[in-house]
Length: 296
Image (tube, rainbow, N blue to C red; front, side, top):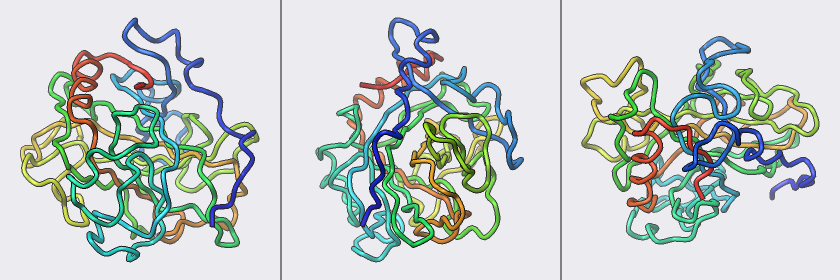
């Protein structure tokens, strides 16, 4: 069961926050940056923090689609074998990794051509009950040190994992972090957030692809994080996806994830976008080095 929380706590629309930043082709949104490895760093990445930042990007906002004990990346064709996941976007994704079976499905995203699938472990309260998320925001941008003009769209069917579901120590906050709303401060564990804000889990995905494999079969061996550009082993620069998964500002004591402790934060992505729309977004926003907004 999902623990339902009053919608009165939902975050304010990001469109108002950044309207002054945008050109004629773009609408506004909010973003947080990629962060550093220092826990609680108040200004981890000045180019990427705060409302939208200065990094070329576009944004998609999605509601919860469904909840299932499935994972088509880690446990393909094994329904019910995974820990509990919250799925956003594509409404037909389950345990099957069959791209053709879900390519034309409906979506829970505001951008109706974003039929990609995003999923993450459920957040559990101290009693072990799943907390209902308020939504997911996906930010697509170039990675660290990557020339925006070199970024290409994900190939159809590409699967990516961000974060480590088996982590036993704090992860780099540039990969998995917690924050209050879209604030720049990043923590390795959930902070106590004020009313009117949200508790946000942030996961950043690898953005340098080997150009061959569509999945790492439960790992991200086929994709790595950029660090001043993409390495020769993974030369293809794809968009760096960062998701913010928002919850009400709940009491942090006793929180856990369906995958284990709050240190096991991670998320999964399957490119089932309408491919033509995806390629237009990459060309119009990232390749042109524009801070675009909510894709709708």
